[in-house]
Length: 233
Image 1 (cartoon, rainbow, N blue to C red):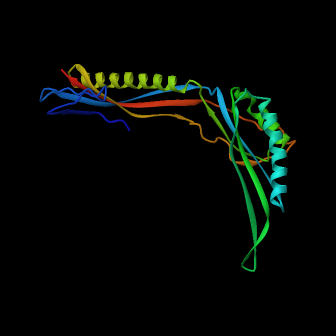
Image 2: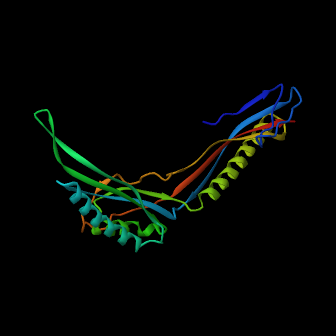
Image 3: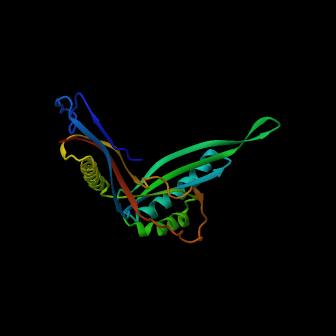
């Protein structure tokens, strides 16, 4: 909800920069408005998280089976993406239990690993997932789409938000039969993009030979909002 406020004030601070504060003559009327800017762009990168887990009665066997499978997965993924684009996020080995007659009974050990892959070609995400599963990965924990130039687009959205706020302030001043004076404060009140780099696929278990899943990157919308205060004359 956007709000428009026209008021009189005893003193105002100029906060275009955090360290800049100027006194305003008492009694000057001001207008306060909110502005919003949006920029939409197609994702040009993705981060894929795949995992694997292997069980055995013996801890050494669980680790050995798991290491063999995940080493093959990492080698396959590394061959599909630039150097340094594959990294291990987590590894753990745990003893699992069953409950019988109220007692814990050791079932065996499970070894798990999660691997993150940076993909610079979003059209290759599905094929990369298929390759990972075919090589030995057992689950997909998320596909995160993002923009390489996110910061630049965030600044563009901010510029549009300020322009929108100024136009609203001018419209408000005109409606009040006055002219817009100088801008005394601009405050960024919100910024972000949808979708942010958060999982776009549910964590799921996949089987080798199931084929590459259909992955649609869609578009990411970058938003910025500001609050602008200006004098009236």
